[in-house]
Image (cartoon, rainbow over all chains, first blue to last red; front, side, top):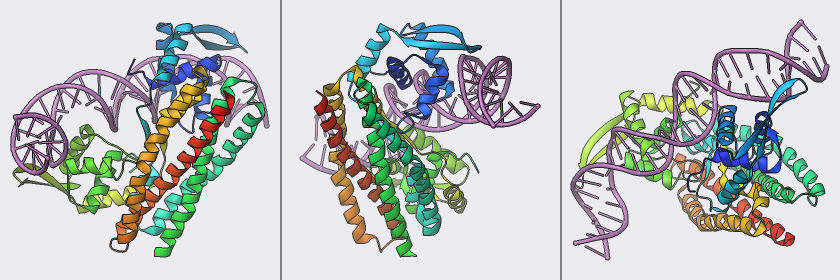
Amino acid sequence: MANEKKIDCVILGLLSHEVLTGYEIKKRMDTTLKYFWGASYGSIYPALNQLAQEELISKYEAKENGRDTIRYTINNSGREYLKQWLEVPVTKDEIRYETLLKLFFGSEIGGEKTSAHIERFEDKIEEELPVLKEMAANLEMVKGREEAHIYYLLTVKFGIKVYEAYMEWCKEAKQILKGRE
Amino acid sequence: MANEKKIDCVILGLLSHEVLTGYEIKKRMDTTLKYFWGASYGSIYPALNQLAQEELISKYEAKENGRDTIRYTINNSGREYLKQWLEVPVTKDEIRYETLLKLFFGSEIGGEKTSAHIERFEDKIEEELPVLKEMAANLEMVKGREEAHIYYLLTVKFGIKVYEAYMEWCKEAKQILKGRE
DNA sequence: CTTACCATGTAAGGCGTTACATGATTCA
DNA sequence: TGAATCATGTAACGCCTTACATGGTAAG
């Protein structure tokens, strides 16, 4: 029970909330989970097939709006597996900020060019922050309805807190670099 | 010039500051860079050999305190390579927070067990925050001496800002979960 | 004398992305 | 009619970690 593949756990988690297609799972990754996790089709589809083979999830092929689709549902064994993983303490949270890396070696290219990296970072955050805030507002309204909403809200609140810290840091960092010119 | 291996860039960056052994590079990763990057011996040593073969860095074998060591220095071509990479805009900052993932699916195991994840996360941050603050204090004192210090300080300040945001969020999150019991 | 640290590396295997391949439907 | 979106998948390849393998030195 030590080395679960993360992609399996994410998929099981998403299927524990809803019945989904592979395509929809990818969409969840790119919207809801994007602030702390990601995955590509190249890992999602093979994982779905493998999970189905192990009977942790079930496959339902159908024609929806003339399109061939495959919907997946979670089985009891899959829910068990998910629960067990959820109870194991986290071993590794990882960050790989290329921006910080480029910043760290900034003396090679100087303050102006380094500030440009900070600004691009800032722009991205500034763009995404309102999206997160809207998510939070929507969740605040419906949070009583479903148990899962509150947990979703917590992750969104995490995103907001962190993004706001990023914004503050960007301003400070640019100021410090400007003062040195 | 699009697809540089990150490990190469990190190594070149570290060698642009100091002459180092592979072992020392690993130590830098585990202390200075650990807040936004990581690497293992299994990627460091092969990368060093490859970079030496491409003559971006130079190898100096010696006996230090009776130990066989290999010191690496950066070459002009290596410094050029590093600079070029530093000027390219960042394409991907990635986060993989297993803690957030487990939180997101928290409804499966309930508020109490989810709070335990938050507390472990909090403990780790609480432990590392003073280390960062000390780093910052030390850097503030010596920052006039070397150009590179200021950039290093910026990354440390980033760490502090973010970690403080984490702490605030942890308190809030635990409160929210407690209110639901 | 034994534990921790210094020091260098390899091999196997896992995990995941990118790019490719295909084809239907919806919307402008 | 063409672009965007829905929908599923594979193959090649790259990158990295884990575990293993080895041996010297410093400190208690």
